[in-house]
Image (tube, rainbow, N blue to C red; front, side):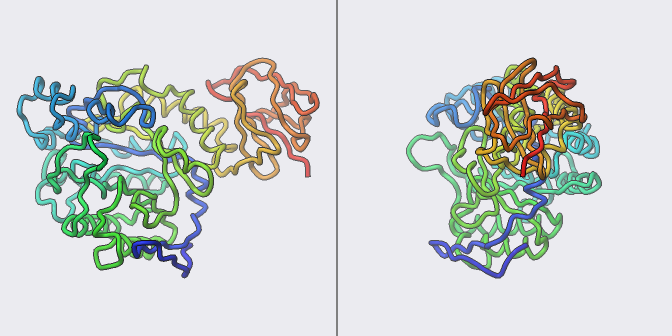
Length: 447
C-alpha cells in the first residue's frame, strides 16, 4: 500500500515511497506479449541476446522484429534490403492494413498463460512504431480499432485476463514513437539515443497512458525506454500525475523503472542487459522465448529457449529474488507460434509438479545452502522448508549446512529419496524426472 511519505529527487521528480504488494513478489512469473504491424513482416536477423552484442553492430542487425520500422530505415541494413526486395517501396503503415488478426482468440492465449503458472499478463498497447492497440486519443485512424484488426485488442486482452483470474498489465512505449516524432532512425552512431523529449510529445503520451488507466484499470504500468523529459517535472502532464491517478485507482498497482530517473516500484533487466539491478529489492527480468520479442519467422528451435531451458532460467531468477516476464510474440493472425507454445506447455507441465516450491517462495540464505553449476543447483524457501532444484540424475553431492536436515529429504510427490550427509555435503541419488528439468528435493530446516 502507498504511504504518505514522498521523496523529491533531483530535477523536481517525485518518488512515491511504497511497499511492493505481495501479489507481485509472490507471482514470480508473468507473460509479456508483443504484437503489432511488425508481426506481418515478422523479420529480423537472429544474431543473439541483448547484452551480448556490441551496440555498433546491434542496431543495423537488430534481432528484435518489433524494431522493423527503425531497422529498415538504416541504409544498407539487411532488413532494409529484405524490405526492398520483398515489399518494394511500401511504407511501414501498409502492415497495419495487412494485419487482420483473423485467428485471434484471447481466451485461448490466456488459458495457455494460466497453465504456464503466470500470475500476471502484460500485452503491448503501443510500441515504438506508435500504432496503438486501442482507439487511443490523438491517433486518428492509426490504431487497431480504425484499421487492420478493427478491434480494441487491449480490451480483448484485459477481459480474457480478468476472466482467467490473473493480474493485468499494460506495456506502453513512452520513450520512443517513431511516427509522432519523425526523428531519424537509431543507429548507435554517436552518443545520443535519439528520442522525443518535447512538451508536445509529453502531453500526447500522458493522454494515452491516462486513457489506459481510466479504461482498463491495470495492475502493472510497464513503460519502456524512458519518459519525455518535458513530462518529468511536476505539472499537469507529468509522469507524477499519472502515478497519482494510477495508485488512486489501484492501490496495489505496480510501476516499473523505465520512466527515467523518476519513480519505480521495481527494477527491470532485459536478457543479459542491466543485470546489475538483480541484487536487492523487487526486480524482474524480461526476455523473449527467442532473441526477439515480436514474432520473427527467421527464428527456429536453435534460437529459442527449449522447455527445460525456460524452466532452468525461471528457477534461477526466482532463487535470486526476481520475477521472470517471459514474452510470446503472436503471429499476425493472432496465434502463439508452435515452438513458443511448446515451451510454455513444458513450463506448465513442470510447474504443475513443482510450482508450489517456486510460487510464493522466498530466497534461501546462502549461509544455509547456496547455488552451484556442477551439479546445477538452485534453492528457494517456503516456510521451514528448503527447496533444492537439482538438474542432474544419479548420485550427486550438494553443499549444505547442518541447518538443512538431510534425513528429511522428500521429492515433489512426498516420496523419500536415498540420502546421507558427509560433513558439509549432502549426498543424494536423484531419479530421472517425469518432466525434463530440475528435480525438486525438499528438506526440513532445523530451528
